[in-house]
Image (cartoon, rainbow, N blue to C red; front, side, top):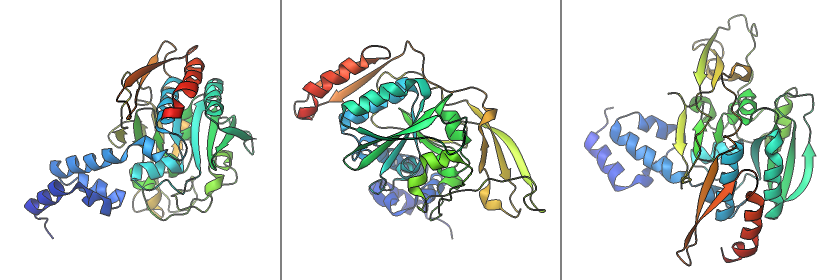
Length: 338
């Protein structure tokens, strides 16, 4: 059946909320029809990417901006089920835990921030077996919502790319949302299967066992006599990656070192015995560049807007010395009026 183009234009121009009736993967299909549908779909997607609203159960709007400042300074990444629901425009109300990934020697600064705003450290998890991509995970609780900070010895990106399940192939940086595998990550109504020997999942995703998040099992050579595989090299931010900017943007952001990292993709060929798990296996040791965190000389500016007074103030967070002093000042002077 052919699509009436004039009708399509009228639908999109009169009511962008039309996209609220579609599943996210259907919105992606609409993007590919023509330039009009692409622009309308992108407008709808951008309207969803308000991190302050999505994180309202964990952080106030000001705390969300400060968290993004830490993400920018420390190279922290936010991933897991929250990122999956966030990029799809689904409700995050039923998600109880955020998963932040931070390089090992910078976790203490985020720890100080969380405790300063009222989070209580309630536990420390170790991988079930020795796992080179994760040191440990710290759990923080406030108002029945948990923040899990997963410490990575080398790089948050290496750890995330090391997961073998596509639920982890969505992540949030200080400025953008990345979806590396839209086909696999955005499929509906699949059960997350935890593999006992993958200790990273027991640390980061155990609360979501049996939740409706997609899991693609690891492909193994010779697992089936009719299996065929193809391999290829991809880069974060390439043409197969969906990248959307967060709103509002941070005004003076440092360059991102996310894009350009190369990783090996191993997939089952279409028409083989398991065609639905294409692009499931990521082998992070093939990274071309190791993403850790921005240069130590970098500054980030966070503009906070106070709706009651109309006043605006820029707050500069310097890596080594200003952040805790600034947060203490914010806690004593500003939090009470927001």
